Image 1 (cartoon, rainbow, N blue to C red):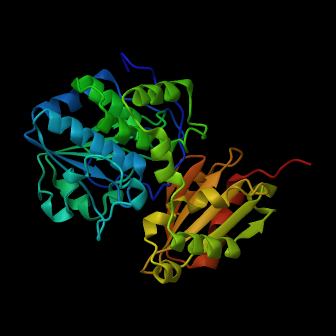
Image 2: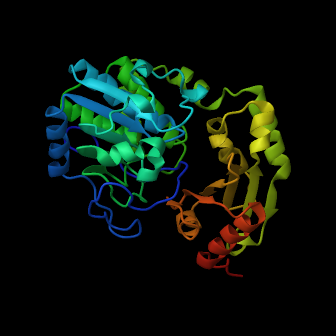
Image 3: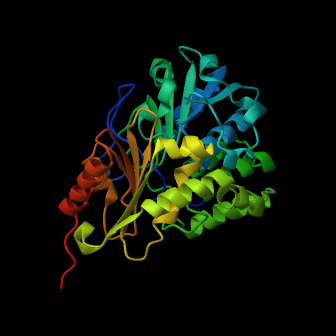
Length: 370
């Protein structure tokens, strides 16, 4: 990317089922094949699309995290500076910004699903690896005259009409930074705050393997723009409701350690019933980080958290420390993601789902040699 350091490495966050769904487009290479980064023609096509649009709809995925919503709001603020009519949205019902992201600037740009046009002129999705992750906005995205996909997930099979997909970027916010540079929009404090929330979220506060010297250089530029990194870190990781603590305590009480799973490398898992969330007034998005507590178990290479939805389905989030590819295991259950972080959705109940995940792990995990 001319003018700024290359941003490389993969990242860790919660993934969901994969598959090319939505606007027809040639598929990108397999996550386990050669990874293709955006070329000059890709960037120019997106710049031309933005230049030719009188209004732009910017979408985060359902249950948005810092990278998805921060990226969308950063672009919204930038395009508003250029006099473009912008709307930011995400396809949840009810549509609730997570409390940990309530500090993000530009939230006045967020509109409900009903205010997004049925056939948008130009729509841009952020951090969305699969069109199904657009939730209630998927149909409108598929009907858009042009749909730009800005993403960094290795499991993105290539939907949309234009794509800026860099599987080597540590966060979608990094691609947004490059897009804003090419648009000629300088970083101000508000935009930088949104981007910092994105890159900090998807690098685990710069602790994950995704973090490179270039990642820190990016963060340095954001700090120079006036970002309050200490305040952002407190909101992202160190502030939770008392109800969350009760849900966490119950989840840890249910935790199981299976030292022989994953080829003898160990699996730690737990689950959160919907009834627990109701009892303590905790919204689903508030427990997305629970996996990062469970994965602390030193005896397990792999961690799994199953979160029950109101319809009884289970959303699985998994993590690995590097010796096991959880993306392959989750793909066997209809999901996908990264080698270090992946997910899936199951309708089989807790025991059967854990058994299926365990079998998928064992199928691709060679036993530790004696």
